Image 1 (cartoon, rainbow, N blue to C red):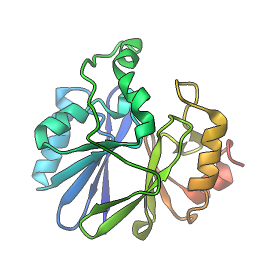
Image 2 (cartoon, rainbow, N blue to C red):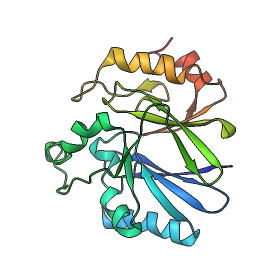
Image 3 (cartoon, rainbow, N blue to C red):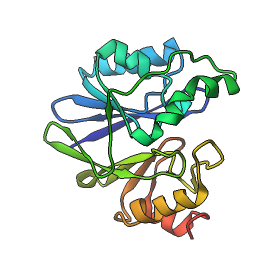
Image 4 (cartoon, one colour):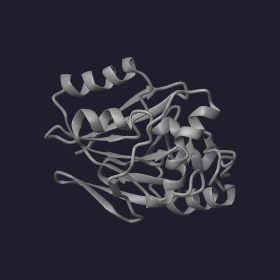
Length: 212
């Protein structure tokens, strides 16, 4: 059974996740560590728990979700995967950081692509990939049915939805993604978002002002 550990990093308070199996293999999702202190915190957690990182898998590539990718790739020599449609967003990362007055000068490049309906295997456990564009052109979510959870990136938040005013964003596309790829999941499914607290599909169906 896969387990999740959440961390909040960088000025945007982005949620980075570790997905770990019983053999202590792990995926690192959306590594957002901005400085050496945050990087050390994550690496110490991995070391102290004897985890063995296998790959980086990103829900999307806005700057706050990739700050720590280079550090992770350098530390563990593991691959970095994104959806190919998010390449324009990734390649605009340096300019995006400058716009926010943040330091970022070396854009990581993916070593594999994550496609719609792909399955990602960690030992005996499988994540289902669902394509959810709208916040960014290549946004994906990672669904784990046995654990009743989904890592949703910046697609769906507790009481809100992702921004659609950034390059490549589209409000109608995002709403369609949520309604076709997330809301059909069981209502008890926990949604681990890219920012803020977790929520459930049932809660968002009932209370999210963008969806009711």
